[in-house]
Image 1 (spheres, rainbow over the protein chains, first blue to last red):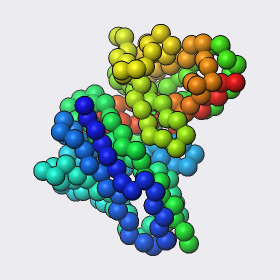
Image 2 (image 1 turned 30 degrees about the vertical axis):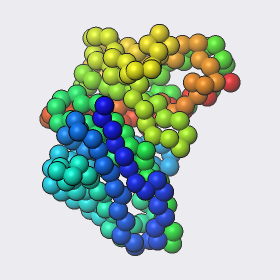
Image 3 (image 1 turned 60 degrees about the horizontal axis):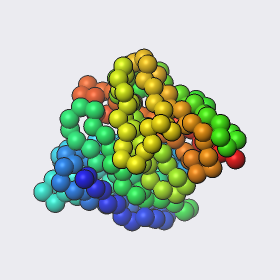
Length: 110
Length: 116
């Protein structure tokens, strides 16, 4: 059974702060997704990783396949970053279903 | 980019009635869509995989007779909650697969169901 563990559950950052969210996953997962759920409920896919590192703006995602660990970093957090961040495990094959982690709720203070 | 819509965005119904939720891919064809359920302050739980032209595949513990899924076209999947009860109140989210390798998921905005 694919499992995904995520930490921390809650995170409060000051605006401008660098933050990290961690995700560990089990054998059987070969692709790791990072997603953001906005306070209104909408979900946006941020990254899909099977190896290495990806960067988009202030967001950086890394994955260590040997250790089965992935991290999402946000450099210089902004108030627009608030929401819940999920990592989700899948496979690199087509039509892969996702197993979601428990989520990290991010609040940003001024 | 790939856009997925859901309708309605929220619905309130009486216990015992059935509710249909639509999930549409607006600018691409989706042979595979997924339905998730999310309770307050919890994660998303996959309910079923919806495949165009064939029966849906349900996750363990999800009653297929209660949550009817129909994927009749390449752009539309529907989830019908039959004989809804208060415990079915939840946030229902669909996603559709797109991308060159068909493993990028694009999520709908969700439907909030409240059963009185």
